[in-house]
Image 1 (tube, one colour):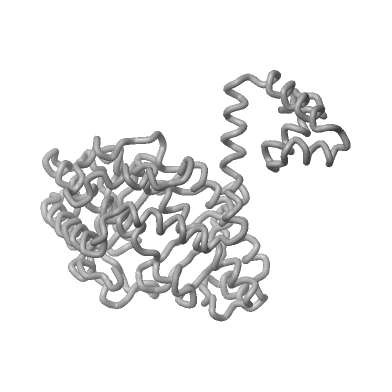
Image 2: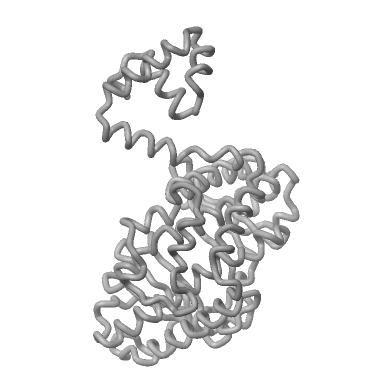
Length: 370
């Protein structure tokens, strides 16, 4: 674009970034719509076809459909309602069934991991070490991958079917803004539905976009449970336009709202967060609460679209990753029933930029609100 003449570059920017029509651009610049049309035509000719396609895609990632600007929460809920309608009606039963099977499968895998690779008793969270999947016996690798597939289907169904409790019951939410090299936010309610280290910098991209890589057909990796046959096909049909562009745009809008909420925090809450404490949204001024309410809905929508678009690398490149087995220690963000229970954390080849952690102890078989 820098190689274009000024008038052509300006017309192109107003049209593709800001979304103005040729007539609106003409009014703004004081020229006729025909002049604008000519400038756009010359600009297109000067740009190679593949470059133009790239520019449009980048711009598309940072714009949202009009309805999202008008009513973020209603638009996200409408989108997710459409996705739920594409799934079987008995999703609660399906989710509970998959969840129990996944946990039982992982506990069976854990029991077979040689002590030379994983000394017993298991270390607590923060002290536990990872085991390369490739170091496991071949038969155990296959069992672990089958358990991972069950866990993946369970998680997708759960996230489409239900929000984290604090999305709908907003006053449950606790929030903390902090710097971890880049601006981040932590969200949770102390029941195990917690998100930590969510990047919200101006150039932050959705973690789902970072980890998914090239599109992969999940059926080539996992055999879908009978009750979920055709699930991903139906979900993709229910997504308007391209899920990648929409999901990334929703994430970008979320980061903007989060930064605005952070900048409006009262002094007392800022000091608490600097000291490492989260604060309840119930104690925040209404303008901050409203920004956060919209932001968490956008985050959920972006996350769900990313799940549907493609599985992460800790599943698609399973044998190149690592698995960590450990037990939860006493922690303020976990209920007492979870203390001492086993968990697993999967990491893809990229390390912690692509990871998933979940409890697999028996108490999690009937996890509250699941």
